Image 1: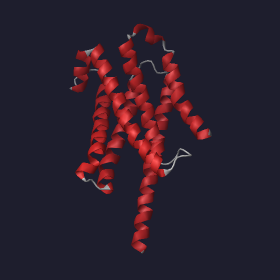
Image 2: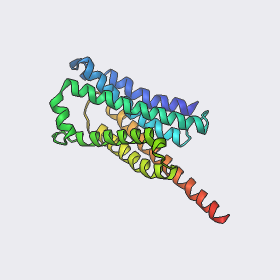
Image 3: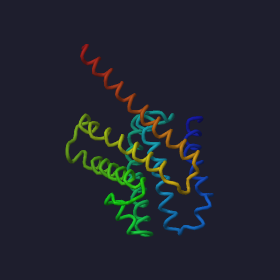
Image 4: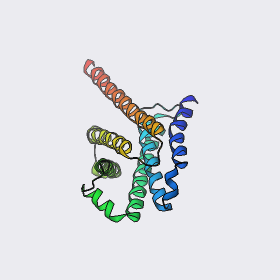
Length: 200
């Protein structure tokens, strides 16, 4: 229960503090929706390694994988809402961002993270039709996951928006730590499995 409570706090506190931001008074509803979709997307980036690493108690390995799959789809949807909302409120700014012509330093990191998320979602949907083996899937998915985590965190940290500074930084640190831990654990399992097969 402590782990679930900690996850709820890690996600809930930044969202709650963002909801009390004074900047919301100067924003329209679509812009606010787009902004909170981005915050939710970052929270889902935290949940993904917790699931695939088996860090959330009470869930079987099968349920972890299924939840990881569906939350990945939810992450892609959150990004679509985030980008679509920003496009609706300011098309020229979004065109500059998507073409890497924006003067804002956070834009290119967000765009790179977006395309990496869409690439993972597309490959996940086409994995069975394409007949991708697990080893091939991991060789593609892990580098893209690293890009998603790194660019998402940098994108978030560079934005001076509705998110409160300390809670935002804490959430970003948790995303990096959880992702690194999950990847190291998976690498160790593969190494140990390879050594066991070699001994046999």
